[in-house]
Image (tube, rainbow, N blue to C red; front, side, top):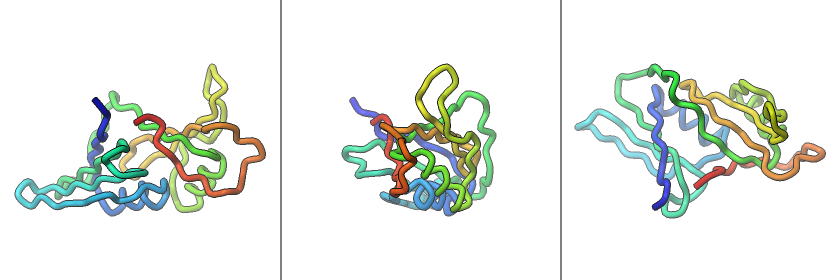
Length: 144
């Protein structure tokens, strides 16, 4: 058994693709319109669906927002340099809602960003961030 994907309903597919692909470095793996059901699916991730867990972005035609409720928490991505990643996200217009730093009651360095629909994405520092490297930090999925 393997975790295949997580589905998020989005109110504007182009805006969400810009966030996940341009800001978080994912690739658009496939996209298909379903006219009979009036929805579009787009799958994004850091590698092929055959061996990576991906996100399914679902756009229901004509629905521009959703009540996220209080049950959903977040997805988590591991990054090589959390400080640089957050700087890059802000420079590209993304919203960092919790700046990088140690988690409460622990030492793991985390940050949170928010996608255009309000979904939270936790960034987790993988390895050491000594000197806050200036190399590009491409997020990687923490769990597959």
